[in-house]
Image 1: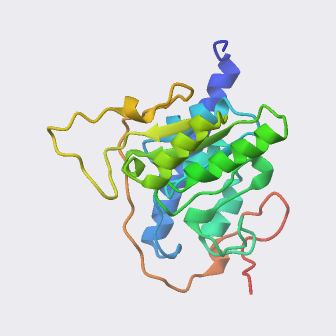
Image 2 (image 1 turned 90 degrees about the vertical axis):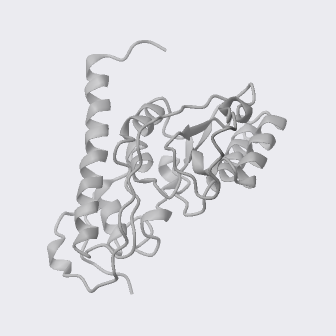
Length: 239
């Protein structure tokens, strides 16, 4: 691959900066109880999603994690529709019913964030198999963190993709957070054991940040005035 041009580098920086500012604003709204529930920010990890998605085409597929805002923005997601979704508005990607961990846009190849650890991997296998059967060169990338490496569904997806020779790259973020198991210090934990020869894994050693849960509250819809690209008002709530 050729070295990126100056304009491309500026575009990459703009994407990273957009992700960072989006997540900062989300944290502010969570702390003000404007966003119900909990959000998992992507602060500190912007370069991972930006670099991977820059190499993808629009029709390539990604599956994300519970910390998926950065992946969606890097793949071309609309921040206005995303913030509407987080605030429960009908103009959101899932009409305000999915929230932070379930944003999807099939038209952009975004097959969804996922609140279940490691659960995006088998979905990516299905998307990769579909592309292969259709005779396309589309790839399906699944993002996951090191906390998913002890999940059976991830290991099964890796084996399935290798056995069927699926175009399904895996992107692992080494955040040093684990949902279930922390290997004892004496274990020589090798990432290579998770890498079939046909796959590449990108490791990022950037720290994660987890926001504090907020209480559900009634919100003043008049505070949200930006308009999404389709012109629908963001303060229109679903029934």
